[in-house]
Length: 473
Image (cartoon, rainbow, N blue to C red; front, side, top):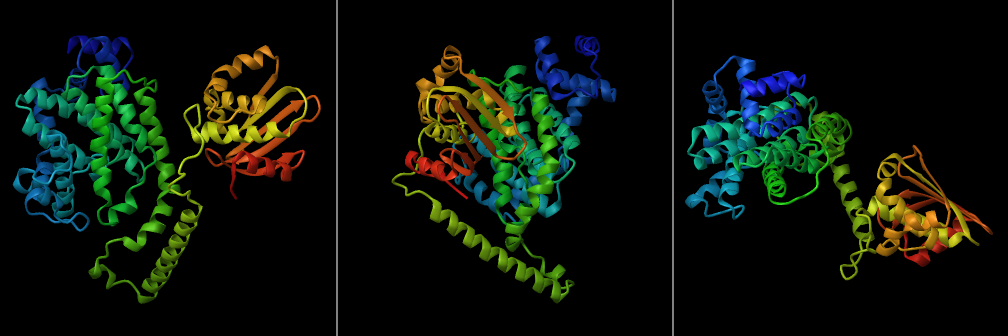
């Protein structure tokens, strides 16, 4: 405890305010477990002994464990029915996953959700992540005999959970069941498996990445859907922990940056994505007929008309998508070097069109990209340049590797500029006989929207058709 306290003061940190990144950093520097630092912080913050802290973190789950027990024995949920009881028949005869420990976590997590709908659950960031924490706790309780080891794992889980609780300001599963659940599962499993502090940092970053911006609120009114949110958090957290502990996977994002981004995206998702989800999911909301008794018929008729329109529109949208879909015998487009069909494929194809329109020796290339592409210039500029200078396709790995040296050798003037228009990618090629410019909107891979072109938009369209580049509206 003393060396941890001294290191915290030395670094100018404050017990009670430690970020997850700072906690992991101190553990790594002192060659300690992350739980050592978390428990030391709680001891200082609450004026408790180590044993008192451990007792407190374990006792914090008393009500939620009761809710999970209800869910796996007698409870029924309006969204999940009695599925935990189905999965508990004959001691797990119906399994969700072969790994016994992870299967337990999943079943108990779902049981906690059923218990939440039956007798209520104490929330952390929300009740969604509390389901995951409770499932994790119960599975660990049945697996770990040593009380101190159990308390260490739970302390790590609750450190992550309380950070997400503080970061959640609006509605959204990226800061609750899916996001917080994934991050806490990853951190807890690394601690349980005696992974390094560095592995924990990597695991949390990896677990959080797929969850950023995920909404949930409307879906908690729709049968079944929350099961894959809270269960998915367990599976992603386990995958992240294993990747971090068993491989040399490169992760260069600091864990605190990832958490801050999740918190920043969270309200944007709530305001922008949630209304769309409500629009499409409202027809499937579970209805309480006793409540509906008090709603005016006029209001219910208006809602029904809106729902009918949504259903009709959704069906038409699905048909349009299906009509555009490739045949399964030719499902894929050309390979895209550089790792992203959006960041590399579409702008490279824009440059291919421009290359076909120039005449003479190429002397310069101007690349104008919207912000998301501009910050990813490390992977897309080589692709754009190989297409602009050589006319290379998106699958030309050799040209992709050589192009930056080639443009320097040939003394081709390169200009790379950020533009603010969303999805914009504008490639201008300067040549001795005829310049060319193609302005397009990014639609990923071999797809783009042609906006402007010189010497002519019509000619650019014909080139795209010849090259197999898909033009969309």
